[in-house]
Length: 256
Ligand code: SF4
Image (cartoon, rainbow, N blue to C red; front, top):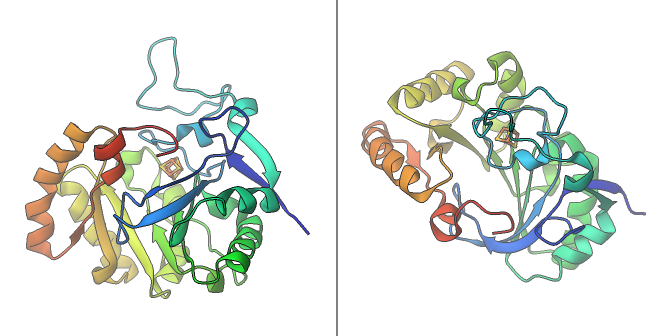
């Protein structure tokens, strides 16, 4: 049986965003992966670099790329590909790589479809390493936990424009903390953000060894400037610094 799944549109008209590239971020950065991007998000971060997964025309969300008379909006009809897990698995399995990254948007909004999709991927590639990128607001649920090798959890701080009541769900983050291969990847702009990350982690009891700090930015020059600023602070405080390799290599484009 195949399950309906809502994918983000890729570069080819009418095709879902599925591609093979290197993991650009986090603890598996540099590894070759097959990426599957799902549509829909329960947050609306002002600097989101995949706003085409949620920032639909007619919605009131603000984005930093808004211009007077030209809000940074997308056509839901064009950007959402309604398809099936069979079809997505077939397309993803046409690529060869040691692992998959299921991303979004927020993929856990479709967690039952994601579980069905992973089973299909694993049926063909039992040894594949499966990562999920999530904003950490939704518990994966008992079906999904055992199917995933690694969660890349990216809770959003105040600079995302999201109120903490919406972006930070303590019970969900604590649940991720019990999964030994869940890594907390925080987007940061400056030292004050790192202080906020440490305070949050201490308050929730998150494992400090699994905290990553990643600069916010969608162009290589800005990323480099922020890396230079964040690096000595991370080194002094024993935190892992993550880059965004795909931005340096390819720029801010879809399907890379
Ligand atoms: S949680 Fe991620 S996908 Fe959703 S709006 Fe924020 S940055 Fe974008």
